[in-house]
Length: 310
Image (cartoon, rainbow, N blue to C red; front, side, top):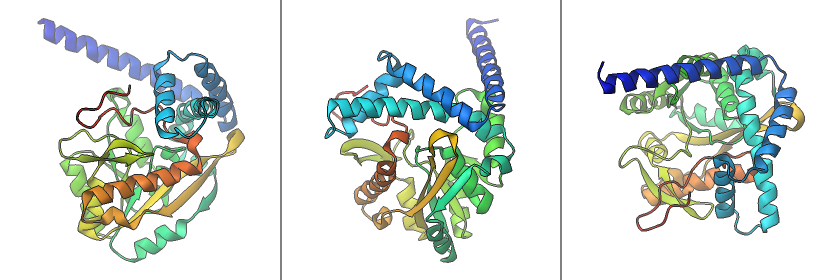
């Protein structure tokens, strides 16, 4: 066996072992009620806050310092600690959100606000681009939308390929269709919109493909932002709606929000359009800033000549 083949075999084995371990952990977590899961996450989040050398703590702190310079150091640190707790809840609740029967999961929705704007947009017959930022329980927001509406959404497979089937089937079990983040998937989004249906996108990931993004301010910081949303809206005439699932305290459940995105998202000028996209996401984040995914390296790609921030 060549060294390359041996290395590939070792990587496959590691992938399989990690995937099996994570699946086992998810199934164990799924045995617990949401309140208990969130209590465990609170303890872990508080613990992480005491270890500034952890990557998750470092990235969270950098992002909050960049995006909330108006806050005092003390206020920033409070937000860091609160966010680490919410990040823990995001991971702890995945077993429940992915593995519980869908009706049990959807039974955790305690309130829905602004849904009329989505229903009215669908009545126009030109489809809706539904944006779900990494805010609160985005898995819950996607499940709710796919249960009640015809949804086709982009799906980026996990780095651990052994988790693909579990995640993909969990997201599709309420009726939605999840397609790859490539040209085939984008064509599927256009078809859904032309049929008056919903195209779902997570709008705040750093685009990987060449020419798929431009820089626009996000909380005043240049962020490489996808242009796909603006192109979909402009070419199809579809409405653009934002949604997120706010996590309620003490494991009580979730509050689903729907709100119209800024109209400039469909502007011919891409810089104006992408700026409007980020403004819409900012508006959602400002409603519950502790629940945004500040642990994600949103600013890892910098404009030419700027130093790395992480």
